[in-house]
Image (tube, rainbow, N blue to C red):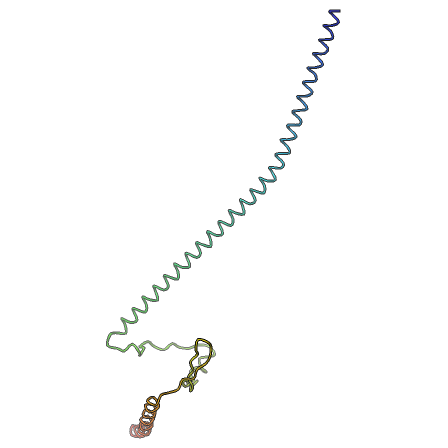
Length: 176
């Protein structure tokens, strides 16, 4: 009997060891499956995060390019403004202090293209006959001359009319 008990205990011990090995294998398989599932889920999340990071990086680079472009543009505009100011100052210096600033001394530019002949032969338009003033509310107010202005205009008109008959006489005298 003692040998039978020993044999039964031996069988039970070996059976329990086999059960422990089977349980460990099942646990390992379940852990591996869980890790694989976790990695698959995280790979999707990591892939999404990497795509988002790439987009953010591209957007950041685009913003930096735009900022650099804006800086270069403003620098160019400032440089052009400084050059214009320098040219204007040089023109004012070149015109000299004795000459009046109202009469430009530069040569007229030659015109090219279709407008050259028509524009040069076209008479200049006279100033507008009626002067209007627009109020803040949008109404148009006609400006009227005062009596003093009317009298001054009449004297200017009479002096110009008296000067006009002398012009043909001078031209005749000069042979023009």
